[in-house]
Length: 221
Image (cartoon, rainbow, N blue to C red; front, side, top):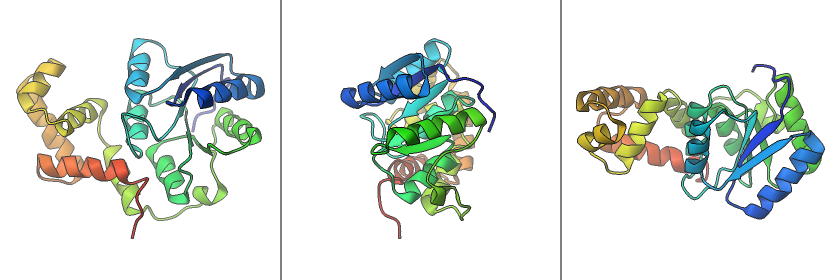
């Protein structure tokens, strides 16, 4: 991970205003963050990131109104490949933490953590390190849910957007219209998407995404 010399601005993605206020206060007073923005959905965050320069760090909750599981991490990482992402979540099981780290987050902090852990997480990011529970950082073979997320992470941003539209029930012609591209281009992207996901049909791709969406919150085995 690259070393981040200074963290001055943060975007918080969480739909609980009181938690956002408390976290903003912690980050400004304890970590030294100067500018704090907060939005309540992933879609609002993606629009904000498209509209201007990204913040120095993004803080993401896993439970948002418009995403479930770790799908938000995958989509956010596509939008900001070089910006540190800190997951702050009540879903703090070991496998959830490991799956988030494999999906590309820089730090995982439980919502019930004390202020010192937030300080430690942001200090780790400035050093270019990863912060999480010690057991989560130990090397282990990826679980089935982590393998699913790894495949989704192979998609380009455009492919991820097309896959999202497929899951919403849009046909190729509608996707082409929405993205202002040729229908043949949509078909080519879908072929690449299915190859990367290891599936053969649109329905299998949709089921694959649903599996990824619930991978972090349903038991395995």
